[in-house]
Image 1: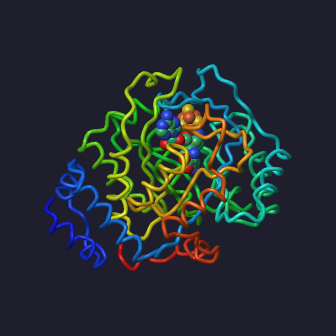
Image 2: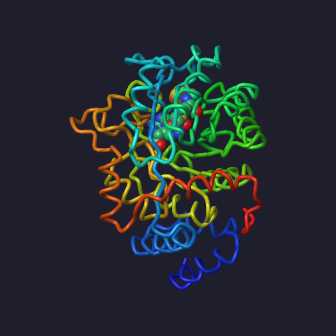
Length: 355
Ligand code: SAM
Ligand code: MD0
Ligand code: SF4
């Protein structure tokens, strides 16, 4: 794509125009460094129009790493012999207390599809209720696929946001990643959640054998869901898993897709995950158009992430204060809680720019 075209693009997007498949193809084909920088610049311009220099911060609580599933990309797949933990409600309460007074907009409660909770969803509801009482903050749940009635119960007890990533909307690739799991059940859980008032997050992986056409399918698939938040993460090979020996991909594809997501979903939430490359990686992702920092954990935490770039590091530099210090160095800052709450409320509105 010519520089001139990229210059006009921000303007066109802000005027409501949509990227065509051919434009997506062209953008996904960019490899030239200067052109990529230009794309990130355009994406920042669109983001800043809606969010100025304000960023949202989510803390991450991976409270059970047990899982009954066999996703080929995931360290926590059932048959991987690793050390696992399941926090009890008091341990989660202590984490909440450590988060008190920190500049966090939402708490993300994540687990594997742990039968302990999946067969007794009321146990999870107890945790959600407790977190709400302790912190009175919006709550994201990332529990995998739950029954509709459990989603309803959790929503009634304080869950605001459902994160459930399709990983890909290319069915053939899905079958290789989420082995033995229904594609429709995942799509339907998100749309049911949305229908009863949740905000929803969808996400895709890159570096898992997705070519440009497959990525376009995924981008269009995410659009169909009308998500409030959209993510892309680079697949990081994990020891002991079927895809563990795959060559790791650089983060360039992810950055490119983040920028494209910003052009497709101009006013939605797009995360820069600390779980992949820590704070230096966060900076790159924000510079590509992200506006949320996820996977924040207290400085002394022994909790796991899903990718855990810092599994073997002594210092886990992804606490709220370190994040905010780096944001400020970039000329950005945490948004107010009010700004975040407004986003949670807008789910019932028809967007000014139809998505
Ligand atoms: N078990 C729930 C589920 O799968 O929906 C919740 C956990 S979910 C937040 C874990 C997410 O982390 C996956 O959906 C995937 O997008 C991401 N992930 C897992 N393993 C990964 C890996 N090796 N590299 C990159 N992302 C990974
Ligand atoms: C992250 N480790 O943001 C978290 C996780 C789940 N809702 C989020 C993938 O990187
Ligand atoms: Fe389990 Fe989620 Fe990992 Fe799949 S991605 S194996 S469902 S924890």
